[in-house]
Image (tube, rainbow, N blue to C red; front, side, top):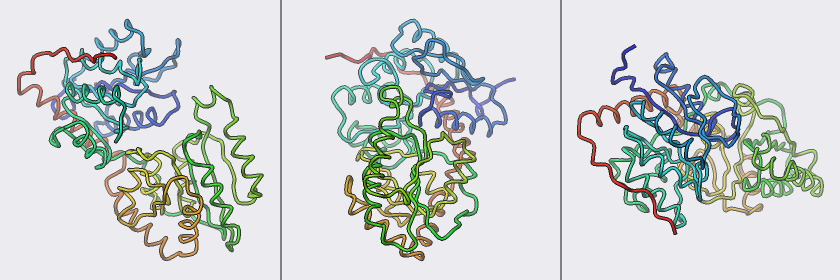
Length: 394
């Protein structure tokens, strides 16, 4: 089969299923979306990042790279250079070395057009984190982000010309956009995702202690398995601490836990049954939240702390933002929505409006076309002379 500009081959670099993490799930959805748009998986391959000595595999995976292993890195580079374009999915720490600085060694040896998708763009990076992003910017043909805030930070903090930045929203699965499945008298408030410290769940639980007077009383469901890294380090102790907090506050009839790792269809039904979604995250830096995007795609009003992506997406009326680590403010916002159905309906309509074009089929088409354009641009001009831009240490 001859590959034309419309379907240039793409080598992806990322964590990947069966690894359980948001980045792996995102990349699998992206690969599936591109393949679906092309009606073929031909020319698509994944170099997965895994520290397991005998990693499980899927048909998409062409090589398992063990971060920090030079011989493995050499093989990964050789394989990736056989594609017409490369997509590096970047998150600090998934590659070898401090902050994952091995990614610089990877991109420095790639001889094919490369786009780097940044899942984190920090407003206040450390010196080493800044060096890593600066070197990626120097070597990449295109920087891809999922929010305007991330694009603005790339320009302000790293001097990236806006013409070298593509803003491509996080994709959402089509079943999320189905009809509302809200039922019953008691409103359901939902948080979901891998469970671990930093999600602000303690703040949300404490906020519900101020809502016991509502009639009907709301239900708050925390859905999701414990993050594998947390599970390996400390077992289920974090979840047990949350359950103990619920018990101490006497909120057993308001708050429930669902510790399953849900497949896409089951999760979509659960989200569509919710009246509203709460995201009490502790980070102020977060420029990409897949859960936030999915909630909006399901036309659910959102109450979130003021992390960057939430401020950007909710400022137009699809939800409310509150200060971090403030149970009183969170409780007040939840009370406002739970006692004002017309306001929730208005927010749901705004959420549905702004989510237009976020479905994975659309994102897959846009991403595939973008990578083909990157490949074509490289064919039409001479590549710049190879430069030694390996990062300095110290």
